[in-house]
Length: 221
Image 1 (cartoon, rainbow, N blue to C red):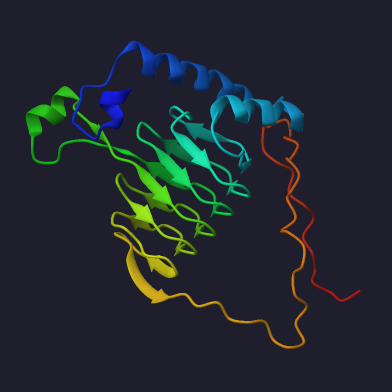
Image 2: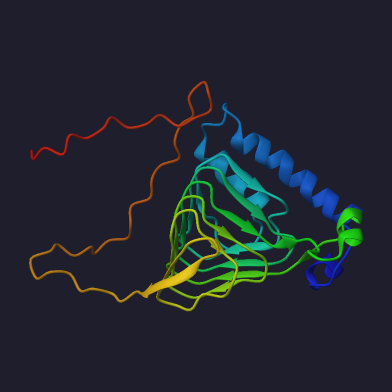
């Protein structure tokens, strides 16, 4: 794995990556399966997939290449259909949230060298994401990108360059839209004094999807 994580071009293959990927695939099949309803077993499978760091809260299905190269801080969340291709290291700071369909991609192929691309050459570059970030649905982070703290990535954006802290980015490729500054709550606003409540693991239906809660009419009690 050292030659893959070095950032140099390589031809994929080898026993070690294949074995790691096979173990992760087995755990993912069970995690994503419609029969899994036990939160404790879900946590055990997530620990098999992500042996390092804290365990994120995950709404299945989830898709991961290796898992061993990804490390989360506490309080992270992955919504449905997130994809993590972690042939290089991926480090994610505390309390960072990912909407449905987000993708973290560390692998790229030659752009101008057609012969090497046809042969399957690739390289992997690490991704670093800070604390308290929020990624809207369908956001993608590409190889080699470093993202600061408290960054918001708008839905559908593709992040190809580094992003400084306290920034909102959007678009393809993602571009800076504005600086983010914490706004103090209004004097009469009730301040949040307890941690964000964690949603329970959604019990799958016969189709493997979570039951949706009944819609609220928004009427006062």
